[in-house]
Image (cartoon, rainbow, N blue to C red; front, side):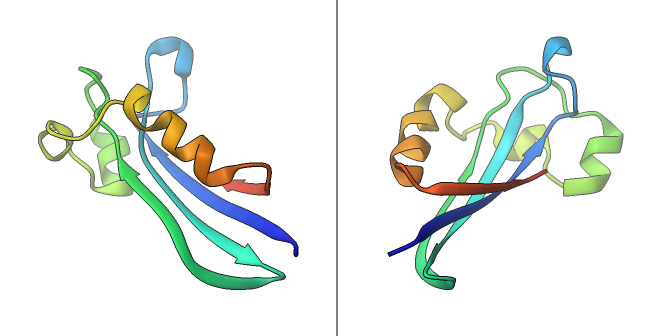
Length: 92
């Protein structure tokens, strides 16, 4: 069995050193090249980082929408468990 996880993220911007944060993770599982029903999706609270207008125009995710969503630290292990030891393909 060949398991691959393909995932995409949305962010507040491109510079972690300036405080930009991941605000959404979506992933799908492929087994032997076929998409399964096993997927992962979370919106993530950016913990006070304001989403700039240019980023909002790309993903249409607002700070107001993310207010009640979990922090990254609250979902990180869940995402790692989902990935497991699979090969990953990322897109941003």
